[in-house]
Length: 117
Image (cartoon, rainbow, N blue to C red; front, top):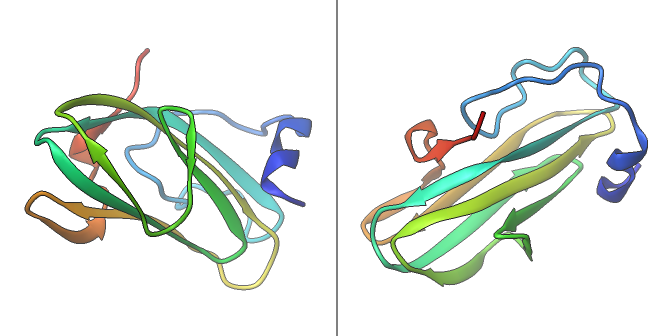
């Protein structure tokens, strides 16, 4: 299964979580997540985004695909952020982190992520 194939499956559940985690998974293999929301950038400058997954994921900012370690200049404001993640088997993790403008490399905290209802 590849990330693009997620659209071919019906979700077994939907909901809202505060960040890019897989803690609420129903099983440990053969599952996926699609995250959609917004990120608040409080200071203009260059930001680098990282993703660490066991099997695969694609990160998007304003609908543009980002590879791990991708740096982008962002103005202060709100940007759409999403991720498609899949897990086949073995170990499982999904870490989405960033650094820039006084922010050390760390997982993106829940307080800068939000969604529309």
